[in-house]
Image (cartoon, rainbow, N blue to C red; front, side, top):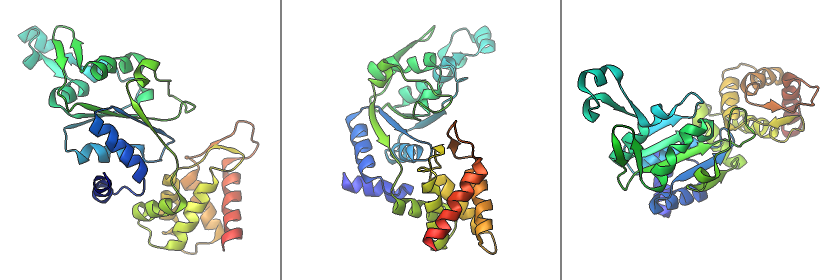
Length: 282
């Protein structure tokens, strides 16, 4: 298991997450469909994609959307082809990602599962439970043994998400992902920001992490905020406090959510955080 974890980390650029990767590998090897839950930017998709690619199976991805209907997931009969050829599976049916993954023994990756309509979510139940689904006028679709689902979801308090049904949750095993350590976030920021100045990276990560503790912020920024901030600051000339504030507002302004009862603006809060970091760490 340790060897597999290290191989995944080296091949797919995963930093840290040894424990989570072990658990994910255990789920895959046991054939238990996997649900990864956590805040935006904690690496759910990174782990899911790395796991799927590591096993070199056919891979199909869908992104949660309230317009993603059952027919988009399963497939549909193309009306002009039905008129010409009738209900001929090879000629008239357009398979969706679920059917393709089942028939090919592939991995179906569902990003933000709890953004899908409940009716679309429910289509997954027989596929996960019995390894088969019934398509009208096509018949029973049976999955190959390697068929596997990896799904991610954001916490339920996020806007635009719905609660998964008890029946659907019951068919997954679950891994909760939290924010990573400060040192690991520095590694991630250095890797993805194209910034090789350790001081900039240190300050960017500290600023970003403080947004998660500020009393006026309901939801702070993920490590993506530090990556964007380090990238912006590395392009500036003086690296003054004012330039850091401007860059931080650009990088973090769209990534944090304020408490409803705060009377402060996003700009003011970010300025306070940046100034406090400079006062304490310089």
